[in-house]
Image 1 (cartoon, helix red, strand yellow):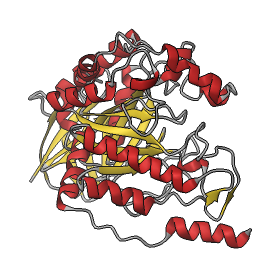
Image 2: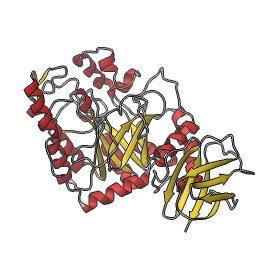
Image 3: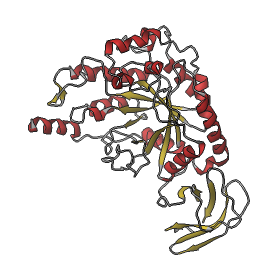
Length: 426
């Protein structure tokens, strides 16, 4: 047993060679510049209104669960409305569930009849409509893709793993199936910029054949960015690193214990309420302040923020989400220059907030108003020549010393969400 486990781990972590292409490196930079994305969890599980894990949590048999497809008919779905929701909220890219753990494909795949085109009365491909609309409106599109499958016989969910494979399944068949579906997503749908994997954590010792899967993706389109929500340090072939419900460097949820921060672009994801998929009982809506704090906190840590919503089964986005994100969008219209295109980690996060920077400009984001009449920015070596409130000509007093910079807040009012001080350097 020990030998088998070692062999599986060796297969999973064997040395791979991956040199990102020039187009991939350019895509990574663009991705970092975007900063704010919309995550969408939507599938036949939405009909039950109890989140995307309802099949597993409620112990619904696969055969019974599949009946949801018979009456999934989202007549109110509008790709244009979804994309405009993202644009109005100040989001620059969308990551959407093409296939979740329930195994139902939300796109017109030829690899399984269990998909939205063939198995539902809707008979349309919302992912194609979304891809076309994203391209039209200049929004980047990423596809979420589940490695885990609760229903397919070849995956054999719950099976014991030996020699890097499930004992009761057909692992080679399942890997082949995934590669064919990924080929469809990359070659059939226009403008796809990234693949967002999830589910690795269900089988930590199996051989996922990442060298083949990642290699295939980059062969089909070298610029496509690959990320994997495995809660571990980055693996060869990945182009950005994911953090689930935690800012990089934190481990409040317990998902990031082994996720040592690497050198890749970073992204953190969080929900607008407490659920990923649509939930009728979840009213724990985040406020505009909480969302702006998370977005700015991520940017200050050099990460993107991917904010999730779960549309209703009819395809509409609920009013609570649109109202909140309209406020966030208006804030970004005024303050976006301190977020978009910036980088973080110039200075470590402080009790009062974070620092972002771009070219010769440094932005101090005061998220928690200090008790004193100043904030202190430690270890800021760049020579300052001006400080003012962002978007105004109101000068702010400062004193720069060897140990850092004091920004004095006399006469400065605490803004509703984030008081941004713009510092110009030589």
